[in-house]
Image (tube, rainbow, N blue to C red):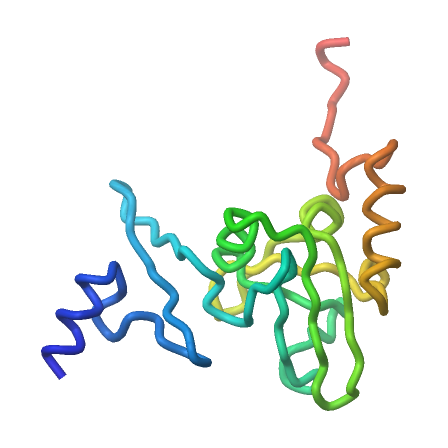
Length: 157
C-alpha cells in the first residue's frame, strides 16, 4: 500500500490514492493555503467541451429545493478545462439534464450538506437538450441579474 501512496504523491494525488476512478486519474495539488485543486473533475467525464455525469435521481437529486448539485471543485476543474456545458444523466429516469456553466454560476446557489461545497441549480434551470441549454445561455447573457443580488441599504445614494 505504501508504494501506491508514494506513486499518488508523485502524480500530485492525495495520500489515499491518485483520485483514481471510472478509468481515469484525477490529478490534484494544493496551493500555499492548503486548498486542494483538481486538474480534472473527480466525478464524471469531460468530452468535447461537456462535463458528463451519471447519477441516480433517488440518491443524488436534492428534494428541498428540487435541484441538481455538482461539486464546486469539480465545477472549477471543468471550467479550467474549457467546459461550457454540464450534462447530468439520471440513470433511473433515463433522462438528461443540460445546463451551461454560466447558468449554474448565475442562477445556482452554494451549499454544503455534508458532502463538501456544491453548487445547486434548481430543476427549472436545467434543459432536456444541449441545444436548449445553449439557447438559454445566449438569452440570459443579455440582461439577467445574478440570482442573489447584493443587498443595498441605500445609505450611499
